[in-house]
Length: 176
Image 1 (tube, rainbow, N blue to C red):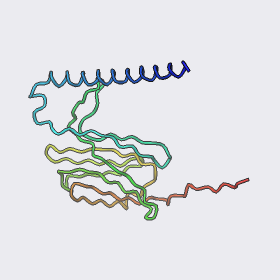
Image 2: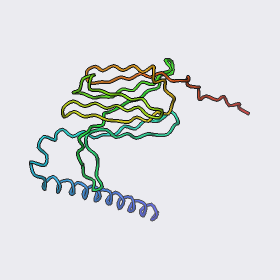
Image 3: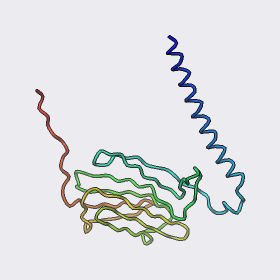
Image 4: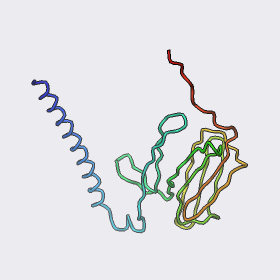
């Protein structure tokens, strides 16, 4: 019986430590904001930061960050001049193609440059203060001659055919 009480006590001690850590982090952030001068933040809004978690064709999770800010070693945010757009990749088995979608508002199709490499696709766009850049790793062989891109309402869609059709990763197992 007393063991259950000990477990409960440890659980609450762990929770208390987590809340203390969160409080210390928030205090560091508020201290930094209080110390900032208006000139430090003039013309730098809005801030964008996020991450996307997907599972690759190899079954391993992939985490990609996007936005115009990055966490620093002190847990604060440093603004960068280039924003990494939110990107989604999808293998379309029926069409034997890789479709890459990227959100890049505020530029025109003439401002966008796409390069297809052996292991990556690079997207770069620049117009005035709007700057986007990302490198997307690719695990399949692409036919770069088949690339087709369209841009509408701030969304770039890039479609690339695969050199070889995807082989089904299905194996039948005999039940003994």
